[in-house]
Image 1: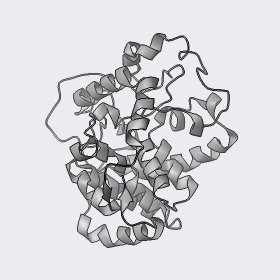
Image 2 (image 1 turned 120 degrees about the horizontal axis):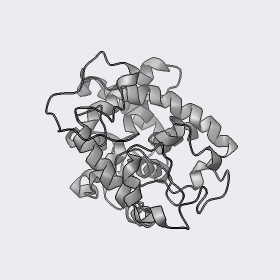
Image 3 (image 1 turned 30 degrees about the vertical axis):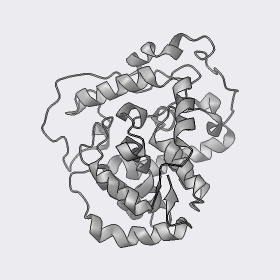
Length: 283
């Protein structure tokens, strides 16, 4: 899926009549210039060494303490530069995802909460929580330490990654074993892994299926493009079903009719209180 780089337009890309095929447009989206540049930097810099360094840096959970809702509120200043579909603050995308999942799957109580917090790891972009560049936090994820799939977005930039020509990393399995399982892969670092680990560290009681949605929702070369199956365990096939279900609320809920934050706050605070035993989390 090669990226095209026309001049960035200031016209809003959003409308309310987009079809499913119009999402993830990496060809002529009005945001393609900023998106393409973000992926270029992402693909060049996300080496195995970088991923390991970022895990060591950010999984100490020593950035401070705050509630989930306080963290959600900080997303009102965050716009994802890898997203060709959304040019508005991430707090609205969080609520849109939660509300879409609430509508689609009303029988799963915890699912709207997963929608609300799935991108909350993007607080790493904020100066007080890491101040990382966009390419280190956002974008589709994929394993490092093995050969790259041609189905990764903007694959042309991957040839500039130092690991591309490393004989230890550029084979089909690289540093991994066949069917080792997704949980044993080193994925490109970003908000997905960080928020998953925040949940584990703080004793979140969302079921494993929901936590895996957070961890792997950006692994599009796997759950959408159906690659990397040679690294999956049998259990990961069930995980894929859950992640694809989640994707119905994540990707296709992005619309310009933005939700009212205060109207929805009490509903989500009740869910937060139920599934996060410690109301003040370590980040």
